[in-house]
Structures are given as C-alpha cells and as structure tokens.
Image (cartoon, rainbow, N blue to C red; front, side):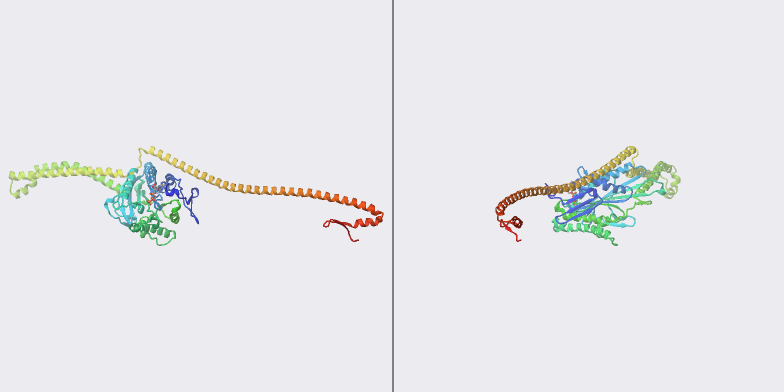
Length: 561
Ligand SMILES: Nc1ncnc2c1ncn2[C@@H]1O[C@H](COP(=O)(O)OP(=O)(O)OP(=O)(O)O)[C@@H](O)[C@H]1O
C-alpha cells in the first residue's frame, strides 16, 4: 500500500455543486470552482467538460491556454500528457484540432508547433536541444511577447503533433544538463498555432490565428518539505521565484492594480496574454487528497481560487494583411510564376543558344571580322582557337541549361512541399468525415446528457441520503420518546396498582373501624342497659353525644359539655 493510500483523505468533492472541502483537525475550508473532479473522474470527463470548449475557441481564432498547477507528484504531467491508455489533455487536443480540420470545407489551415522549457528562468528550445542556445524573449507591437529564433515544426497531421510532443518529452528527459527529477522543477510550454483562411474573396478575406498554449508547470511544494539543500535548494528557489512571480501577477490582476509585474519572470512574460489578456485560459489545479499533503493542497486551492477571479479579454485574432499563411500562398504563387517563366526560358533559350553558336560559327567572319582583322590574322590556327572557344562556350551553355532545369525541378518540389503544408478539408473523404463528425458530436451530446443525468441522479441520491439521515434521526428520536413513554406508562400502572392496594387497605381499615365502632356501641348499649337503671335516659343520651374516641391513646373520653 502506498503512503497516500495509507493516509486518510482530508478532501471531499461535491462534483455536482463544483465544491471542494478540505479539513484538518481544527479547521475546514470550502472552495467553489467552475468544475471539480474527484478521484473517480477520468481524463475524458475532464477533457469533454472543461478543455474541449477552450480548444474549440482556438479553432475559431482565439488564443487559449491550459495550464496545470500543483505540488510535485499531484498529477500535472498525468493530466496534461496522460499515461498508457489514458490520454491526457495534450494528445486529446491534437485529436480535436485535426478532427475539426478534416471536417471543414472551404477553409485552409496551417498548423505549426513549438515546444520550450523554462528552467531556472532560462528558455530552451525542446525541438532543437542540441543547439544549446538560451532563447530570448522579444516584444513586437502586433505580435506581443514571443520567443526569438524558436523552432517551429509544420504539422500536417495529428501524428506530426504527436511526434513534436514525443521529441520534446525526450529532450526534457535526456538533456545534457538533465538531473533526476529536473522536469519536476521546470515549466514546459507546448504551443500549437493554427492559421485559418476561410477562402472568402480577397477584399473580405481575413486570416484567423488561434494559438493554444499547453503548460505543465513545475511542482509548487514548500522547500522545507522537499528537503532540498545546496544546488537543489537554489534551483528550487528559482523555480519558486517564477511561481511566486506568477502568484504576484495573479494577485495584482485580482486586486485591480495598475502595474502588473509580468516582467518579473520569463514564465509570466510568456503567459502575459493568458493572464488578464487576450486568451481563454483554463487553470487545472491538481491536489493530493492525503492528509500529509494538507498544507500544499490548501495553498493550491487558495492559489486557484484567486486565479478564478481574473478577467481576461479574449478576441478573435484576425489578420487581413499579413500572416504566414498568406506569405506561403504568395510564395507559392510567385514560385509558380517563376516556374512557368523558367519553363518558357528553357524552351526558348536552350535550343536558340545552341543555334546562335552555330550561327556564330557561320557568321563568324561578320561577327568577329574586326577583331580578326585587328589581330591581323586569318590563319587556320586562329580559326581553330576560336572554334575551341566556341565549343567551350557551348559546353558552358549546356551546363547552364542543365542548371536551369535542375532549378526548375527544385522549384517544382518546393511547390509540392509548400502546398502539402497547407491543409485542406479532405474533400474526397468529406462525406465520410462529416458523418463521423456528426456521429462524434452526437456521441458527445449523448455523453454530456448522460453526465448531466448522472449528476442529477447523484443529486437525488445525495438528497435521499440526507432525507434518510434526517428520517433516521427522527426515527431514533421517536424510538427514544416511545421508550420514555413506555417507562412512564409502566410508572403509571405501578402507581395505579399502589393506589388500588392502598384503597383496598383503606377499605379494610374502614371496615375494621366500623366493626370496632359497632362493637363499642354494643358494649355501650350493654353498659347503658346496666346503667339505665342508675342514670335517667336523657342524661345517658347527653353522655353518649359527648363521648369521643381518642385514636392516639386508643380510649374513649367525654368532651366537656
Ligand atoms: N489521476 C491519476 N490517476 C492515476 N495515476 C495518477 C493520477 N495522477 C497522478 N498519477 C500518477 O502519479 C504519479 C505522479 O504524477 P505526475 O508525474 O503527473 O505528477 P506531477 O505533478 O507532474 O509531478 P512533477 O511536479 O514532478 O512533474 C505518476 O506516476 C502518475 O501516473
């Protein structure tokens, strides 16, 4: 069992509400994002819901940036690149770009890619790593910040883009200065530029340029935790410098400051458009849910939460005059013109030159007569020399013609090459591709519907669970009250029994008392009959009326008259 599996999770995700809760023993924090994905979410779900819309915008001519942020080992590279069988954001975006190109008619595309790495604030070209150059940034009014002299790879297919990605990954892992885990401490930016020409008439023609930046940032962990010392520590500090520069830019943007410190690092300068500028930007914050990652995960969520408040201003990049696409088209037109001229020249000049030479030989005395005359010689020696020089000239002309022919062939090849870099909607495959595209869109809609249904079902399940919990609590309360009631009833019954017992006891007592009274009366009567002879009846009655029983002393006495 890995450490993360052994540690308890401190994170709870509520996907349907876009909420994530992180807690430790004393505190709890809840963050809301556009979307949150738990441990059970897959690459496809993330792509379809969050990344697909950004890439679609790039295919309409917007700039788009997708970057993964988080501590080392939290899954940034996994998210961006994926691993065996789990394609990440980058390969899926390649697929989307070329699927879109294949399904479009009337639009010409030119796709090229560059791949760079920023390590300790130095930029390296990952597509030309042997060069060893540190690339510089420069700024042009209409272009913005860009990397000078970076290699661009023209890509005609998804496979070409895959090759660019593979080459860059290979350069990152095997560079001369490569150290273990270097890639964890460097930022990688793969940029795919897509130029689109909708083929409208020249006057209304506008070339759109969509730029997709795919960024895998360095790990954002604290140095105390990484245990780095010496060179590693200095290196880590520089990495953190660029990440903190990124944090400062985010803060300044969120707080609406006038000065945004883009210039503090190459990373922020390069991402300038993506942060508060002309770009649709998606930040993917990766966190590890295990308790030992609590501090880093909380910091990442706070970072992302701040970044969420940045307002970008994306616009479609339309370039009606100048673009690489237009330059390529113009160049092709120019080359074609040149080619037809060359073909014509070869047809005209080739044979004529030879004919001229022949003619020159024929008209030799007229053409060169003066010279010969000045040389004052008409001897066969001179004639032979002249003939030799003419033969040499013929040879030179032949070489010239051969050179021209070669040039024509080369031009033809160049045109084929350049035309093949421009991508057209595949017309012969059009119907098939359209059908596939429609089916794909339908599938996508189905998946989206199913996902929504899933979310609704999850909501219902959660609601039922809550109701069930509440119901269980009420049920428990009812049961407790019933028990209390039962106990009370038992008490009441017991009390009733006690009352009954006491009543019957009282009855017995009363009966006994009555019996005693009767006995006494009898005795009294007896005594009266005895005394009657001694006491007159009226006096006796008075005495009886005055007679009273003293219970405490259990004796009769006479009340005073
Ligand atoms: N969601 C996930 N599902 C499966 N495996 C994952 C997931 N996230 C990350 N991993 C695995 O975890 C390991 C570390 O991930 P990864 O290299 O992507 O992290 P990282 O954030 O890019 O690290 P670093 O900052 O060092 O580049 C990898 O083996 C990766 O395959």
